[in-house]
Amino acid sequence: MADFYKTLRNTLMLNFFDLLVSFPAPLILAIMLYEMKFVWFKKLSQTILYIPHFISWVIIGGIVYQVFGTQSSMINNVVTSLGFDPVPFLTDKTYWLVTYLAVGVWQSAGWGTIIYLAALTGINRELFEAADVDGAGRLRKIWSITLPALKPTIVTLLIINLGNMIAIGFERPYIIGNTAVRDYADVLSTFVYRIGIESGQYTLATVVGLFQAVVGLVFVLGANYASRKLAGQSIL
Image (tube, rainbow, N blue to C red; front, side, top):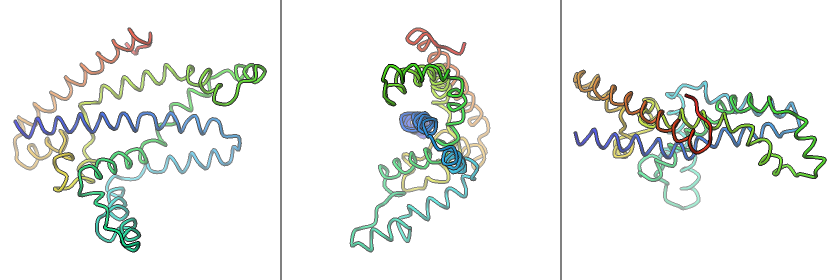
């Protein structure tokens, strides 16, 4: 039970920090892409941002170890050549957490912009023209026109993300994690794999999976209720 509570804590912690860091990233990128005036540069940027989503986590894990590994990695080779000690990106808990979050943003942010860009295409351009007549600057137009138009999309995605607070993918923590940071990297999905596949405790693994589903439903309903009461937006 001690391992279960630790993995539950790690799952909630990683998902909470992921929500803080990864949730705003697609929104910011989408607004930046929408504001671009050069169509060719906009399309090129979108293509480059989408690519990481299609790369396997196994390949991403290899890239992470080549770039952030403590020994003979790209960054630490530069750091040690300057006379400093290597940075333990993957073996120190704090550095590993930052690396984990950064890699998650890099992998998912570009693909997440698609939904926001689709919502942005529905904004009436006459609103921006009227704002230009009133002398509104770019930031004022983003604050007064773009963000309010995106509010239903933001609320919907936020509710979905809150519903996934108890669920976490297997590949990312399993591939990037290691024994040195197991106190942070061991989450419910890796726990289920370890007790179900490796140890053969299928009943316990099933119970943990059912627990994730029930708690996830509670999170979705709670987030939906709070959103309806506070913002007047909901998905149910």
